[in-house]
Image (cartoon, rainbow, N blue to C red; front, side, top):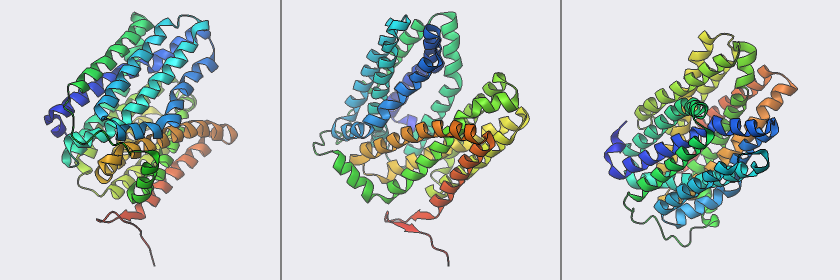
Length: 399
């Protein structure tokens, strides 16, 4: 799992990503809490999520073009500096009348993340190659994601309680500056900039010509929408079935622990199992685990199910990412990655809205069944489609 860390440039990229991710997740609870303290408004608090989700929907494809046209190191450094500057705006949001600064900062920070992510996803294969080093790199990133999501939100809340909201802002600013410095210390990879003809049309053509991308895009979107709908129902489920917010905290911790275990497993499996088989098995297992979780009435059942969701959910995210990075030519990888990131944002937003709407219109159980069935159907659809060695797509037929 540590193979990619032998590459100096990846060590720097990974360190910068880890530090900046930690800084960002420290604010996950702190920002909504700060807005609620200033306004006492649930609507104003909820708008912080809207501000974060808009840039990926609006800027995703453009970010992909920039990642393929410009030097990706410079794109990532610029994105980190933009995010550091954006976050400082929140220091001046000290009353309800200055709340717009929080929203403006969130939009700008999210826009920086939209620029950063496709450039990073396209740059990693150029640094570590597309062999076992790539699966190691993706597994390490998944492990960091699980650790940060497990530790950072409660840590951020504790820091804000003991010190102040402004202290967290300065920590986040410093994390982006550390990331920019780490990336600046890497060496430039030949052939990763100056593509003057890299445009949206070329990216669309590449997407049409790559069966693996065309197949994985809807499969990934369906899974993320279903996952978001169930995640949105987790809090009311915990209150109604498990007994309160403390149990929800344990479930979230179990999800994070499972995510870490999944990162270890996917490192071992992604190089040994066909992507469509591994993806289908992971999605089916995730669907089954969600069904068990939402059917439980005690932590004794809910916690193991949450661990399983984390394990197989992690594998479901890493497997298609690694497959794409290996199959897509690097000169268009930024644009293809950006399309997937945009679809991810849209699917997450749709799912987060659809889950509560279905639960309110019918029942919590009905919403869970719909999401689990969609996830399982997507897994079976992916299993029925295969890619041969020449990259062509064929549909399995039964007589």
